[in-house]
Length: 98
Image (cartoon, rainbow, N blue to C red; front, side, top):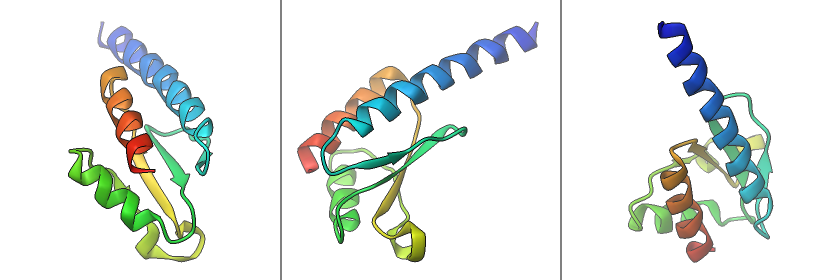
């Protein structure tokens, strides 16, 4: 019984992840990376991660700023796959900030 619930939830997250990935890949200036997890990594323009993170935070959207880690994560941010409504709010705020 619980297995069916988990399978439905997993399928929904996978579908929402692919929808969110496609939306991110369609935004100019963003490089989004495919994922098998419940979050997506994306890169913004050089030196823009802190500004984008702060702008999203001011809009009530909290994601992870990975830029301080440096190296391959420079200019990268990570967003958790949410509900379709949460993902839409994130994308709307991201477009405003960019």
